[in-house]
Image (cartoon, rainbow, N blue to C red):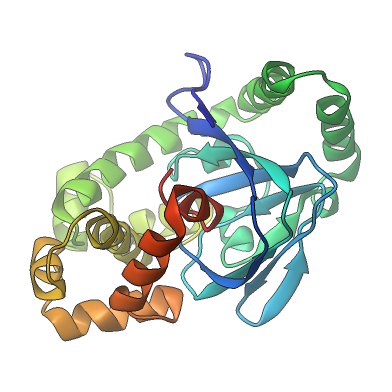
Length: 271
């Protein structure tokens, strides 16, 4: 179930999603989304991620930063989570720490701001109904937005830069700097601090997600997908895909299609 944010938050938050796991998932591939996700466990179910060899049991509230490494997910049947999916250019509006500190990690938000996030979680859990829970979360985001509104100028810069990368699926940093009027060094710094990964890494994630969409929703050959997404050739495509997931595009296609839409949502695709 997906719910759109209010008009004031729509430029920064893509959607809210409720995911309820209908069957046990064990060590399934977890796909890099290109977004930052605030994940709230609204059930008594158990979930855990393994990122870069580190297992992390899902706490009450966690922030999943950008993934650039293969990750795995284990979830018990019946687990329900509320996910706020934040646009990659906007994450710095809601969190005090540099976004690079959350990259390739699932962070327990009690470790970031315990009192504030514990109060948020308790209010959400006490609220009756999904609409009330999301309203509490929206109010939290609005307050954070007011707190960090001085960062809005940089966020708008990033939004413009990202739009260019989404169109081209490739990074020409000198051209990006010239067209934006920003220095290459400043663009690098802007991405690391406010997105969490470098412009080059972010471009790779964009290209990967475009290829994943084609793998999942078309019967196109891997050679055709590689060409459409800007990879040098099929071998380059497979290598990059395995870098993010640890498996081949063919294996991913088989698994995702076989298990259906609910499974795709659980492993971070199909949103």
